[in-house]
Image (cartoon, rainbow, N blue to C red; front, side, top):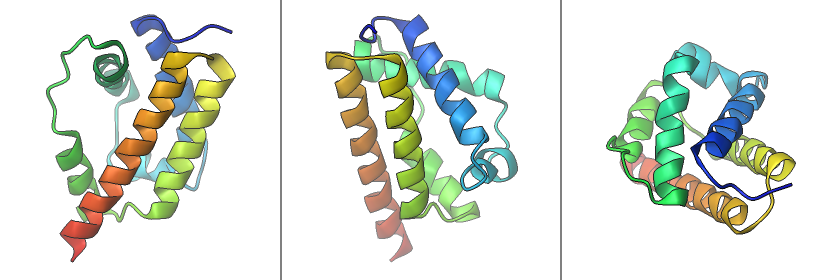
Length: 125
């Protein structure tokens, strides 16, 4: 196995990750029923996000926190959902990559999940 090196690697990662999410009934409804994502449009946005975070390429301009706060208003994003998300993310990284950037992306995912949960909790109080 190799480390994450470029946007093609990130596309593979995100694509495989979303296959896991969408096949897991305990979380897929967020994407299919609540958000109703069009996966072919969503994947390039996610690749841009992760490319900026891991490869430093820039280009992601959306407000990630606000997007999740808006989703939470439609359907609560519980700590259990974040755990499922993280477990699928970690598994997908570990199945496809090994190295410094692979570890960095897992750490970044944990940070994002933690920050999102804090922001959601603050908004709910």
